Length: 83
Image (cartoon, rainbow, N blue to C red):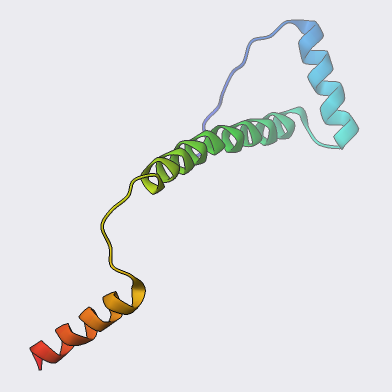
């Protein structure tokens, strides 16, 4: 279902946006939709930055873990115990 959005602006700004849309060969309403979608995508990038910061913070922690060969040997021994 489509919804209508009314945006109030002064005439000079309206004319500016209308000219930009016309240069792109699209209706002003389509230009507004595309611009809003672009702004939303840019906003979503902020969430990725927070996620990357959290991953970086977690990677700075040191947890006890054996070397890979020892870990694989422990896994194999574990499989033998279940059989």
